[in-house]
Length: 135
Image 1: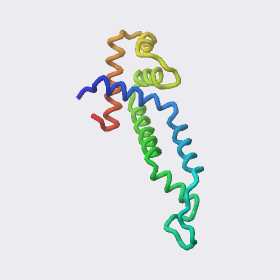
Image 2: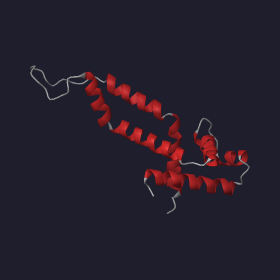
Image 3: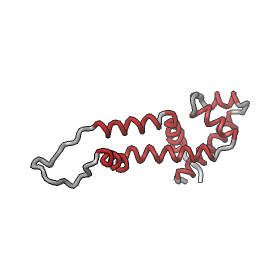
């Protein structure tokens, strides 16, 4: 199965998050940690909530959809990077690593034609989509 151009673009944009994913997870955890909760237990007595603050945070982290999404994305990208050949890792680092290069610039740096670099891009994105379970 081949990917549509729109899907390739979406996967390409998703892979750019590799630079900031750890930071985004940390920010979300801080948001959950510092958010004040409304206490509905006005009259005292026992509530059904966990009373230990550390346990409460762990429960919040494990139930938060944003953190679950970001950690799954991080896991998918790490598995993707581990499956790459050395040439594919070079392309990955030139495109989604510390540098931002267009596909044409990557082709020039690796001495590939425009057609060849786009064919390699398609293989990379298809491999990533397979790891994510999208194809």
